Image (cartoon, rainbow, N blue to C red):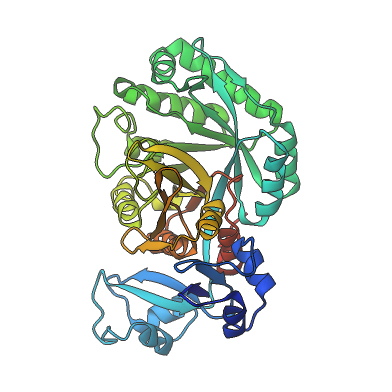
Length: 419
């Protein structure tokens, strides 16, 4: 795997020659719009046939040779990649890199809002990289009835044709956005909870879904126990179908907090088949410009979460988007990772990189001053290594309509997606 960070004076012609590839290949893999315009700081992914780089944390009883056997490599390769280690005295807890022919194996889930033909195109483009497709098409009423917001039938059918398991995604959403009142009222009432469960299961079975993805946000903290009860009853009613639950990211339990308080990670992890921790929007709309999903924060969330949730049923969220902040008002516009990169090129902005956050950013001046944070292949490789290091089930992507061709090329080359 090669990642080339563009330097001043670089050209695609020279880069293609350096890596023995073509300009056209670089453009397609990296979603570039021009063969002549690039900017310093732009990260280009160039697939090659080198060994895959895995991360591993030394445990008691490990030897260099036992690790080498596990990863189908050699002690020599490991020592070469980690010159700082003493092969006869490994330190427990030390993280090492392992060049290996074995790819990491993960389960992935893509979220899809079925609003246009572009949504079907997104499924077709990403099909080989998806285990599950959560179709964002359902909400529920104050009376507890779940209902269809958008036509999902063509997307269920296409997912099945492509070997992807479709999940019915339901949210506590109204025309005003996520509703704490709606979630609180239904979850707090046993009759309404039962009605909601029955209608979710009926819709799931009628539409031919493989399971359900729950995304209830801003649940009032007093309904913390009610939410767990709802999930237990829903899982029982779904029987063998999948229960996937999305929860806001946190690094400590604050039961009174209006955003994270209702999520009892331990209990939810015991009930759900898969728990997706939403490790994104650290930098959020209308807030100050910040990285969308800084790596240092994501690792803190993972370290906290795996103490409560079985890592083999845990996913973390990877954003396929960035935000453009108009400052100082912090008016925010979302754009795909690919659009952010190409916008930087179009305005001639040098792309900076925050090493701790593993996130690129740039500024530009139109009428007003703007700051854009987004994601690129440099940071994504580290986030996949985080999943590998903690032996998590996998990742989710919000959302598939946001173009990020580097990610799909990387998954094809470096990761085995379990179907």
